[in-house]
Image 1 (cartoon, protein in one colour):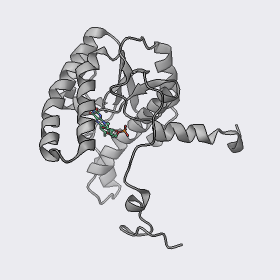
Image 2 (cartoon, protein in one colour):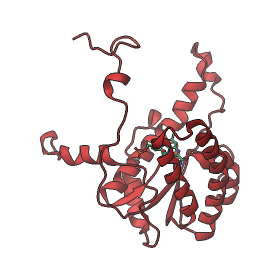
Image 3 (cartoon, helix red, strand yellow):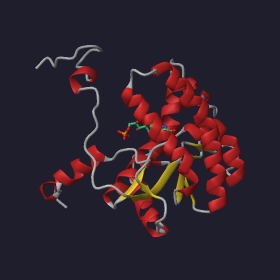
Image 4 (cartoon, helix red, strand yellow):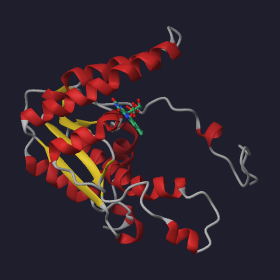
Length: 233
Ligand SMILES: Cc1cc2nc3c(=O)[nH]c(=O)nc-3n(C[C@H](O)[C@H](O)[C@H](O)COP(=O)(O)O)c2cc1C
């Protein structure tokens, strides 16, 4: 397909309206595995460090396993939401809306038909001393974190976009990682493999989404030097 044949409006629409779907997931309707596989196939086209493709994808549909994952998820979310609530008080309606929606998802997570756990065979605390031997003079923490989770979440986002264009909803979640080892035991995830989060997947029951309100580009994009919000030309 040539560039001028790409339907850019549709592509941009999907890119700007793929929201975290929590309250508008169809909890009754089955999601065929074949659609999940089709979307994962697309996700595998995401960038991957040195083409090593360290990602792995754990698709969970078994009701008992979903219930156990949901239990861990809720246990981690409760204290987190309490802290968020204390910090935002009554003043931040957006945070409160996200908190309500997050809690709804947590309460119903076991009913969401498919749980996808993006994993990577790398760990942040793997031995990266090779890089130091190469003369890398920086603390390697950020490099490790970026290298380990960058590719798996790039692909995770592609997966979510592919779901969206097929009428399914999902959200990027990470809170269950507070109980990562419990979920690893439950699903037989071996030592050395990191979970990146959890993507609950179901049919979207709404019509459409609008682009979200984000901080405007002119506040968050800098030119030539940190803090310069005006391009030189
Ligand atoms: C790193 C990361 C972690 C997140 N973890 C959670 C989570 O544990 N639970 C949840 O419900 N949403 C989670 N989210 C989704 C965000 O809450 C959501 O993207 C944000 O509120 C903006 O909403 P939107 O994606 O619909 O624009 C996470 C998002 C990111 C990027």
